[in-house]
Image 1 (cartoon, rainbow, N blue to C red):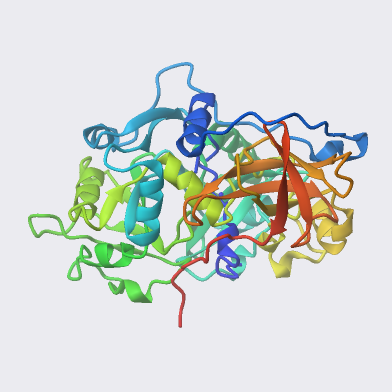
Image 2 (cartoon, rainbow, N blue to C red):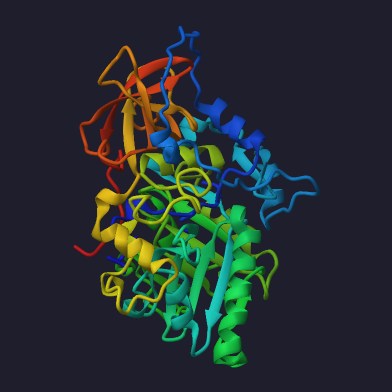
Length: 480
């Protein structure tokens, strides 16, 4: 939802997206999808004997959070501009954040798709995410009120991971990637699973800002006419570079000079040799830990442009394949990236969630900080020992994986394990040969690397060790 420190510690994005398996960021859309994602990676296990776990009242704040998932659909599901293409490629479609979205495709299993992304390139449809454009003389001031980032330090066409913050508490309303397009114009993407909450929040905040600063101080557009796809993997740059139309594009067309956290508007070459009717907004970013791009595709001049772009990217089936939500989830977890509604929510501030780095260094003076929840957040940054919980990575011993909701326990007294936290995401890592990994919140003081804990999995306590994140090395393209 990584200033930028340009996307400093980008592997912790949430990130950011918190779109389902977002970009920076959306939360898992329905119980059906959560079951599908779990079954996609769950090995067969035997039922283990039960172990009693004591849960003292002192650690109640770090029990499972009351988080909001993207609601399962009770009415017709929305469709992205690429819905027909997904069905044509044999996608298994599932409800997700109010949309019918591909879980995986007929040509690759979940694990095969995951590894294809790590070794070649995969294309994800993330058009369900909400794209915004905010402009006007008050745009910078407004965004620096609702987020803690040093957006005033961003150069044009650079981005940062940030968070929309709840007034007063500093709780994370959503994670978002914000791009400064010009001095007073910003493009940002929020999670599909938080659409209703985000739009209500932004509408109220914008109306209040306009009432104080004038109706012309802000112009806000939700870019419903744009598709969004993510091309991720080590071969992504070669595939995309071959499509860039060098004659129509006015910006630098060499993608080797487009670094992580930067964007450009570039035209592509269509099959007939002509340039696309409009340029695509190409951002070097992603939610997998791999090098790659998020590509915003306008449809105002051609409704078929998204499908044309995707078909061009899929020309070489030995290089690029379509990938769905299942692979996206396991990829982002290996990369240490948060999923909204699971790993982050309004129950956490950025320091709680180990995302204190999104708070700009220039914004840490309590005398001048004006962003929502500044007094709470800055106090936590100044005195980390006051935090009740910390987000950590865990590796869990061989056996059944620790999944969301599993209790984390202190096993210093093996006969009487005491509950000290909760798993928010977990699965066997395909890249690490099935090693069980998990993200969790644990009691402050138990968050240091190497701390030995336990996780209650199917009524059996399995040994777990606190480790640094990400589990895989990030491969973001940065200047040499």
